[in-house]
Length: 311
Image (tube, rainbow, N blue to C red; front, side):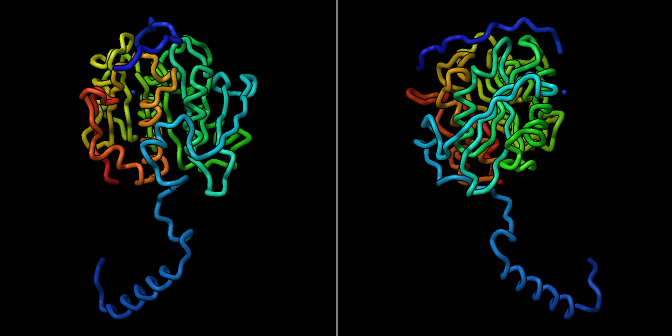
């Protein structure tokens, strides 16, 4: 079992808050053969497989390390230059020799600031993502408001920031903690074109997300006394449609504040889900399917469930 993490945000006190074959067969075959030959001569860049592998082959050790294969830098976003959210910090890989990167908006929890998640944001960026850990307009904003601010943060990150040249705008994801986790669910529910969502010990009054179309990994904490897994994370997970790529990872012995503390297990499954679904990098599937051990002595997870994604 783990030590209980030190709280960095207050307990929420929220209000309630979504063919026809013809006669020219020989000609068709000839055209098909010519097309196949032309495709075989194409360069790998022209024959896009849809995968965006970045970095070396992953290992458990690498995912649990405090930093990934990419050196990172950061850039502050002033609240005066932000529209629809309260500013924040962008963390991004310095080296672009492998190509561009997916974009992630990371929302704080109730009363918390973006600085509480700087270590987690930098850690995600070091695995090949451009991450905007943002501040909300007020520290008391409710989950749906935080979800709308995520959309604004992604728009700024991909269209107006100084690092847009590093970003593939077709690859975007959202993540957030507590009410920011609830906002993650709301943002993903409203934006089905997103590639992934990772709510971290999420809190929301809405319990059903049966219309979700975005691959979602919910990370809960076994000893969460603010957003108990039975009332929040597990209910959210069980409400997701059966056809959806989805996962639930419950961190053994952890409190509601595990995401603030740069918890290795939180980071591991957040990064794994983003790599698998934002980058479509099937090298990371090994950490999801077959399911990792859970519920046993010494296991990092007290509970784990997923759709066992196979692409």
